[in-house]
Every structure is written in structure tokens, then in C-alpha cells.
Length: 194
Image 1 (tube, rainbow, N blue to C red):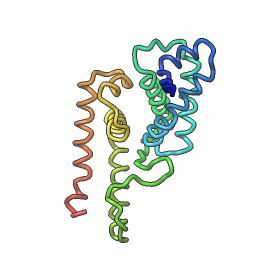
Image 2: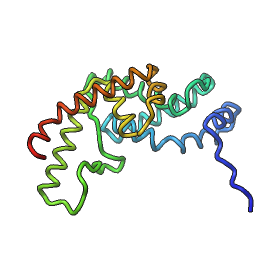
Image 3: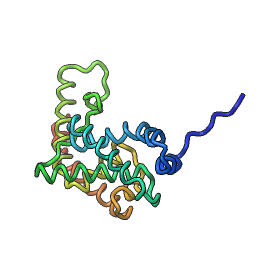
């Protein structure tokens, strides 16, 4: 029985793409489109806008691949492109983002265990989800971005620092202050016994 060939690394796929293998870039897209979409969707709160930005991020990555030097992971570089596109869109619209805590199918992430929830429990869950969306949307962009990448995407501080081009200590500080602000903003839910 032959051993399975390990999947090529991102760097190998990048090198093959730069050498003219378009299929290698399609492999990169297949590898990263799901997680990139989830990040952009949570950041924007708009499914159509998230699809557009993801598509634009991959186009920009492809057209600038010869400039990618490999100092950071390909995924960090790609997330940085998408984040810059998100920020650019908000500058154009001059609007605060609506942060989504929904998954890509539009179902809310579970904030309470689902055990055949009663109408009262469902109302509480919906209120918590709404309050969290609003509180995340009120955070300064650097804190909101770190929270989304760390808490929703499980990235390590090192990865987030690469994406944002900041020291890990800054990322940790932004996470701490952002979570502290969220706790204060959402404290009324605990006080109300929800």
C-alpha cells in the first residue's frame, strides 16, 4: 500500500503559481476561501459584501503574488489584504461596521446551549446576540479586529501580529482592552439575571 503524498504547503503552491501553474493558485483559493469568508463576513456583517471582498482579496493576491516574499505566512498576507479592503470600504461609506456573530448560513452562533429552548430562552439568546453584535460594532477597529481573529478564528497572537503588522504585545493589549470594554458593555445582561 502506497503512502499518501502530503499536500503541498502554501509556499510550494505560491512558487508553482508564480511559475505559471494557475491550478496551484486554485488550490490556495480552495484552502483559504472558507475561513477568509467567515472572517470578512463577521467583520462586515454583510454576506454579499463579504463575497465581493473575498473575491477582490484573491484577485489582488494573485496579481501581486510576485511581490509576496514569504516573510509572513501566505494566510497572514491574504488576511491582511482582506482586512485592508474591509477598512477601505468603511472609509468610503464613512459608516461603523455591523459585526456579525452569525455563521455563513446566517444561523446565530449559540450563546446558550440549545436544549429545546423555550420562547423565553430563545428571546434571551436573541437579546444576547444582538447586544454582542452592537457592542462589537462599537469597539475601535483595532480591538474589534483582534477579537474577531482571536476569539472567532482561534488564531495565535503571533499570526494576528503578522496580519496587523504590530508586535504581539500590542495584539495582547488590544484583546485585553477590547474584552474588558465588551464585559462592561454587556454587564447589564448579567445584572438582569440573563
